[in-house]
Image 1 (cartoon, rainbow, N blue to C red):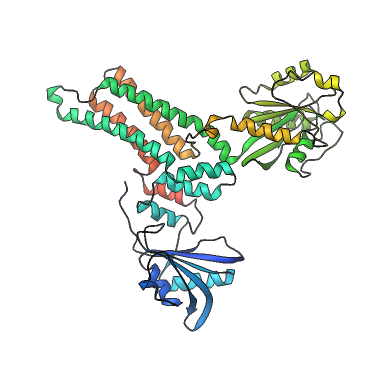
Image 2 (cartoon, rainbow, N blue to C red; image 1 turned 180 degrees about the vertical axis):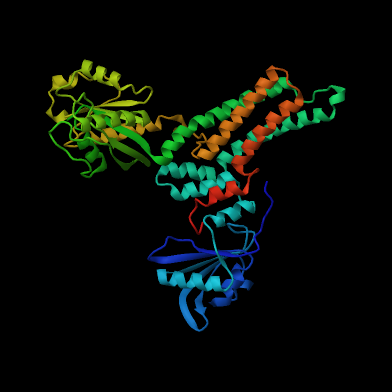
Length: 459
């Protein structure tokens, strides 16, 4: 673990969003945090007060009162950064926060860099790097599921799995390293068959984590859901109904939508990115042809396809041929029979044997709630969300796991070819290195800068 690197300077930043508000919070962290605030605070002597206490008073610039405030004290090591932390709650006026920040800077604080409070927390051993990154994900979470995943990672769920993998590898690495010290005696301390079984287990665990990244990416960025179908099937009407606003132009003229129209909607704690596309048909119109080509490109990127068809004019045979022409592969397809309100019982009956079918009327919104529930059921059917499995949402973690898997594969190949212990140890150390990079047990300044500069200032 990275040793404690308690800073010698004190940082300050606005911890709440900029702009007008009822209150604002200015946060200071470092060895002089309490003394800097005490110097301008009129109230109790903060340096004599216990940790985790609140104190009312005024902040003054010499004889001028800047604001009435409540000061929160968090003394080291019982604070977010494990340093002395002071949070000043003031009125949420941009003028007041600017004056207070300038005052604290004059008294010796330094303006914090993006993510520097969390960076100090990591460097001081409050949590590991994967947990620190989860803090940013938690702040950015905009649905129940992204909040759930980020909270689990911030509380160490993902880190615990990585550390368990690493601990098992370290044991075998140490045994092989011990063999190198007794190379002249030609002894084996590490059971090669047990090492092979362990690597197979680790590969399975890492494979599961790697596979979860696809779902993690969907949760983080929204479920890309393409609305496809022939011209005049009602795709734009459906998009407007799902978004509950007039986003797309609706017309009886076929080929109205010639470009991709995209917007988002929250459903059951999950964000869907609905993508309305140009109607699929052969056309001589140059612009419409470009729209059809873009539709096919969007279909390749979709996590879910809603194929809309007119139940009053389509046949099951035509529908089957249309879907086959899409070449969507393994992407789930929901069939939406539109214009249910205009169809006869006989027309509706033609499609009742079709799997994944929802009958609706996009214009009157009949069947819309059933569609929304079906969409949620489709996503929740994934075991990665319904169970208690760890979901990888961070690209850096995904890449680290992929490199670890490659290194473990080389260990297996080395075992198969009878490589000596020094070569096996090198490959195992490489796997340990990549796992250590994920949690921050092995890190560089460039890596930390790349991670924490993406945070907001004040966090």
